[in-house]
Image (cartoon, rainbow, N blue to C red):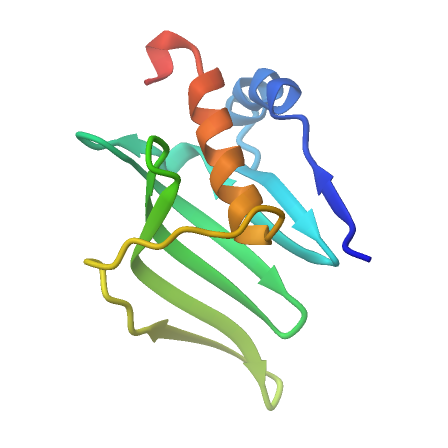
Length: 133
């Protein structure tokens, strides 16, 4: 059975300015399913003409993937602009760029980690104070 735990974004949005003032990490957990987790870099979110540009960090058992991603909340889709994979190989930390096609927009199925992350990004953005947009 799939275990899903959503983070209370309303509470997290209220706490974040405090964290930034104290120099702590701007990463906020958006969703977690079966030990796989996705976070947003709240300090690197910008608004495009019809989409948000965000930096996401995906945690898997054997690697971490950091992506610059455009999120279209109106159409519930994303496109990866750049992607970097980090993993350990023979005791060394390896960072490797991944090939992406920034022209391709994709949607996610409901209940998937990607789908929950997409919805959470849009909720996070909608909950930000007007001055933060």
